[in-house]
Length: 193
Image 1 (cartoon, rainbow, N blue to C red):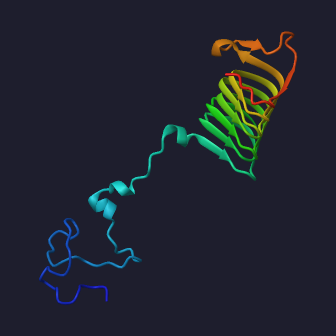
Image 2 (cartoon, one colour):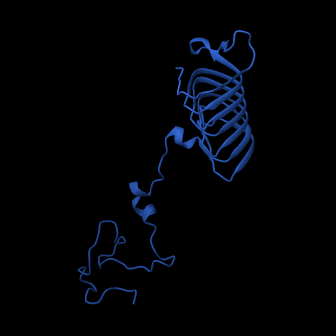
């Protein structure tokens, strides 16, 4: 049943023969193997790996992306993450990272020092954004906030100690003249960039 095909013994005309599929010293025709046995030849070893069989190489930014799903609770310290996406609940310190995105269902409590942030859910704690902070209409940000640029959509809320970096540099400029707390809720779609 799994031997040679009928009518082709010794003729070499039993089917298509591809280069490298016939063992050395045998010119009778292709051998047939059962797929479920250990008798099948290792194609990768005899012919080298095919380009399709190589593992896909993801970009550096994709390989350092962390997604915390809706029903996930994560606590601790997160470092060297290019992009953190929070759909569930995170109580952590985020450092050596590039960006954070808190979705409408997400909650982040803790400290974060990053380049950019997009908040559609809730952020509570210390937030330092060296470049751009975007607060969407469903976003709520509470705590000590320092940022380079800010964009707040209509309905977005920011409350707490708020400071802007002057010219995108590391030195903050108080958002109030007395250096006190600020609470803001944008209702007319005003933006500051």
